[in-house]
Image 1: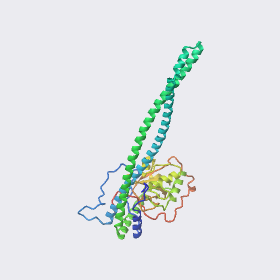
Image 2: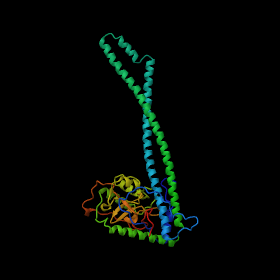
Image 3: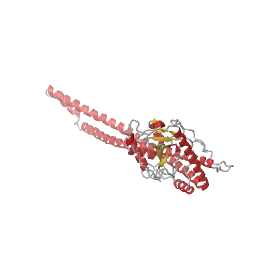
Image 4: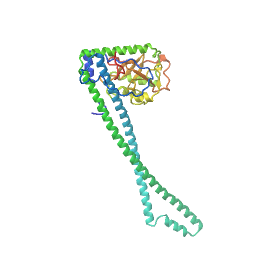
Length: 402
């Protein structure tokens, strides 16, 4: 199985929810924008596994809590995998440069050794600068002696330069060989870590698949109602706060990025995927901005950490909205309180309410770019039919549903 594996739970999620005819799972109200991203200690999934002497809880809130715990653990494992994948690619690129530099250094070392060997042979055969020196001593006139001394000094300088070049070449080749061996060892360690993280993601997805498979249509329907109620409540609260008042136009690059993201609506979520046939959440946002001509970090956590933060009151289409305390989910702002996102396994790229997941804040990939003017000249991309159908929520929730 390749590193870009498909989610093993996708079929179970789609079939189970389609059978029950339900909406997506509920989430808690959004967190205030700009809240700290300090990593939280891992919490034991209290509802994920029943105690040995107690039956598992089957109430809808308890089941939703278990499912959301599994989704949170899956997302964290996914982010770890993607971060390692980015680092591994960077190390592989560095190793290629080291290998090329080492080959160049070894070629220079071979030339330097050849030059040093030639000097040694000339001295052994009496054709070195020593015989030239003797000719200077035996010169017939002073001018000839001066000319010979000049020639001798230049030849001696060339000989010393050859020796110095050999020394430098040997040192450089040795240093590069050591660096290359170290880079290879680091690559191997990263590849092993990536495999462990990949296995962890797959295991979490299997746990989600099993939980969904064990639920009845009635339980799934109740989970759907809980999810929709939570999403509606969070969205209404955010809109009532006035944080998203006003209409803004995107920058030219933001417009291109948003158009690209909208064109991907309907394509499946696959963890680790970067298109063009499937995406995960940050794969969609990074590729959209790449196609707009601006490279941004690959993972949602890097996007939150490295891109300039903006207030929700300043959101314009094309900006990125980041979710959950650990920045483990990201979407692209569409306007009018909506985002384009790849929600989670079993779902497809779609349009969702901005508050479908607990908000952490927003970032802008092109902070220095001016918006399109005049505002009346901006026309949002046309949404395909059914763009808002399907699951809205991402992986996790930070509070018990109610």
